[in-house]
Amino acid sequence: MRGIKLRNIFVSFFSIAAVLMSVVCGPAREGTSRCFAAQEEKPESPSLEADRKVILSEDEHTTIRIATWYDEYNLQHLKAYLAEEFPNYDFEFVFIGKSNYEPIMDDQLSFKGAPDILYVDQEMTRKHAITGYFADVTEEAQQFSPEAKVKFGYGNRVYAVPNTSQYLCIFYNKKVFERFDLNIPTDMDSFISVCDYIRLVKGMKPLSVSLRNMYDVSDLFLGVIASNYLTTDRGEGFGGRLQYGRTTFTNEFSDYLDDWNKLIAHNVLNKKMYTLDKQNAIEEFAGEECAMICGGPDTFNAITRINPDIEIGTMPFFGSRGKKKAIIGGCDCGFAVNKNSNYLDQAKEVVAALGSFSGQMALWKDRPGSQTYLKDTAFVNDDAFGGIEEMIVSGQCFTPWMDWGDDLNREPRRRLGIELQKALLGEQPVKAALKSVDIVVEEILGQG
Image 1 (cartoon, one colour):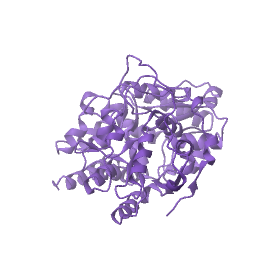
Image 2: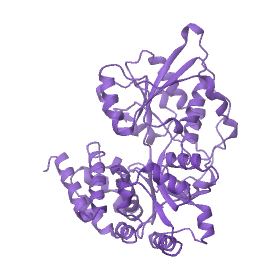
Image 3: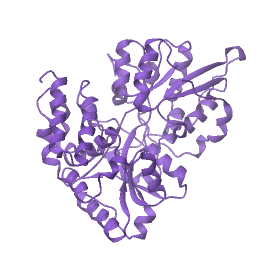
Image 4: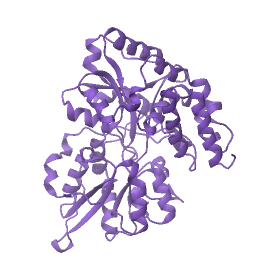
């Protein structure tokens, strides 16, 4: 599969000078999947001086192919940046859906026919660091925080340059909340009260979310668990105990299911969401047919593309215990270089640019509300994201499955989503879903 060539037509879409930037972002604490830690001092702003352009003679003109699971609407600033930064390179994007992306790239890498640069998650990075299909980019990633380098590292080397952070939160329509004279919730009880009022008194759907994808269900559930349990001292150690077979999901999560069950009992989550398409959920919110929606940067981009005038705010996931607030997110995506690329040096040069201040800024603009992992650097997000900024600064941002160990960070999360879908449809209680995940964990650890 080959994408459409990108030439310099994207330059006009991009203007670095329009972006606010530069507050401090300190390193995250060790031993946790939290994406950022609290800050105290602000370093000087990074220089805005433009990086040196790579200008090639006409006979060196070449095409760099980039594989991604993101659609072109979520890559506009990246495309513009590459066109401006490398005017004598052509960039050809290969778009593949996330569900098929990894197996297709695995095959292409094994047959030495993969694109020059690949979007990768942490699991894929580690796998192909071992197979030897990814080039060592330790030098190109040296300016990133230790946390980010560890996430995309193997054997003390780095195999992908980090993208900006991912997150999952609740977006709300500010105008709807103002029109209904609603206060912003502070915990699960006040969130449920707001949802009941919107649905029963105002006759509007409170929350839209597509639960067709098992990972979306799993992440939403883990967001609620995080706000109640993972924010506690014991909760922080759950992943370490799980990967060594010293605990189970049933043992640890069973006492924290009340809030999830409340969401179902109050019809905030319901069976219809299992059949709801993600695009339809976005259109509901953008069309002001509901007051809130769950999502991340791509959701925000889609909403504002449909309704540019909408005023959006952000909320974390709420709980009744722990710190009562958390979001799901972290260092989820990076850029790896195909070691067998015919343009290995040029591809490394491109990912090095993506790891620069200006490169990270372009990626950040495509992921509104995100944050960079460059050391001593952070970008100032729009006021719309003020509701989740506290979670990032205070370290209440989690990617729980990355704490479960290399063998457990994929299949248990997938199975959790599948089993929770069954619970949502009334086919089994939530505790039965947890027990099914425990069986998977036992089989993986060789205890079944």
